Image (cartoon, rainbow, N blue to C red; front, side, top):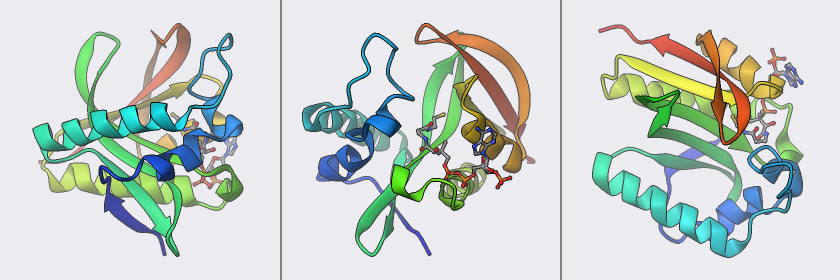
Length: 163
Ligand SMILES: CC(C)(COP(=O)(O)OP(=O)(O)OC[C@H]1O[C@@H](n2cnc3c(N)ncnc32)[C@H](O)[C@@H]1OP(=O)(O)O)[C@@H](O)C(=O)NCCC(=O)NCCS
């Protein structure tokens, strides 16, 4: 059972356990900048995400098993294809890929969106990220269109949530 908890200001090392791994980082990096993220990069990300929590009372959570961080589950404001949206997202420690962890973390973000009464959420991934796109489908999101993000083609999915 994964314990999903809101991000804390002291979680940079846990995030670095994910993004410091080149197998994970390569999904977020441009081709010409393939190196994993540093601890200082991760502290900046945590600081930004803590700011999102303070402003909106929702944001990034980390998933823990026996005090080991196995991934993140994010619910956050974003701009995608020129529209302001709320996004769900996930990332899993590479040692745990293929075991349903990403789906569980995604379900957690979706449940939080529903609990907040949101009417629409999106998710997006690089078009070649088959595992992430499969999670979107398993969570009931529907493909909407491709769009350019960070210089690469991405696929945008949406789910409308009932009133
Ligand atoms: C994408 C990621 C979160 C998936 O996590 P995971 O824990 O392995 O995912 P799950 O095990 O819950 O489910 C993956 C699903 O995708 C399927 N899958 C795996 N690789 C696939 C591929 N190349 N093409 C299509 N489907 C694929 C799996 O079979 C599974 O579907 P199933 O349950 O119907 O069999 C993980 O690989 C990761 O963190 N990648 C690096 C960072 C990243 O890409 N984050 C998301 C950015 S949008």
